Amino acid sequence: LFRAYEKTKNIIGEPDIVSRGFLYLKESQEMSQETKKIAQKAFEQVTTQNQNIGLKDLKLEVERRIAHFIRKRLGREPMIIPIIHYV
Image (cartoon, rainbow, N blue to C red):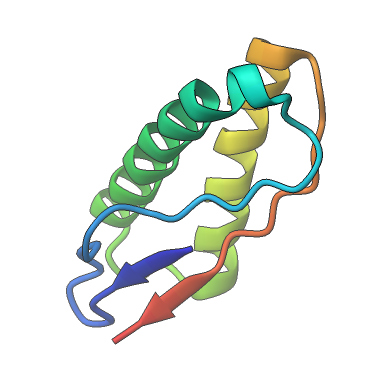
């Protein structure tokens, strides 16, 4: 879940990650923190490169980058649903 200003596309705070059943307790904290960093970096890079990007395209690109990271790190392919709440 991202909270961002609609006009500037600047993120408010850090993203929230909700995980249901694909991480074991031991790896949960570390992976959650790393995934937050990847998600935030992806959001910022995509919106910096294209300030007028549509919401659908932004979600797809963020999802693609997070999925790549998780697949590379854990060898798993969880369902990823980016939610962007503009204020």
